[in-house]
Image (tube, rainbow, N blue to C red):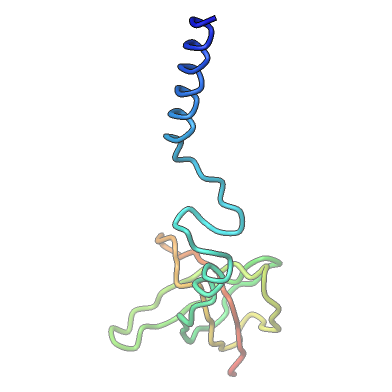
Amino acid sequence: MKNLLSSLSIACLSFLILVGCNNDVQNIGGDSNGKDDKQIEKEMTSMDSFKASIIKKDDTSITVSSTDNDENIEQFYRLGTSRIDHTAEVGDKVIVWTTGRYEDSRIRQGVATKIVVVE
């Protein structure tokens, strides 16, 4: 009986140690950095904006051309637009707001959060 009680105690203690050492946290409604959905949404709708011309448009994205005024360098962006409504067409001059996060390549890739036609 004493051996059974000792074995049971050791098994319970081992279980508690293993469970206590588990760092995996299921994060519902947030990300791994402890940010909740509202903080993530605020970051995703940051006001990184620029003027551009739409040179290509499809159902889920637009490609725009923007010239940096300081260096007079033309930069191309392919921006996802599936989460926003807009009426911009090819050839329109627009102000584009983005998340501010881009994948750098010959054509920078990102996500538009708002598009306003100015011309």
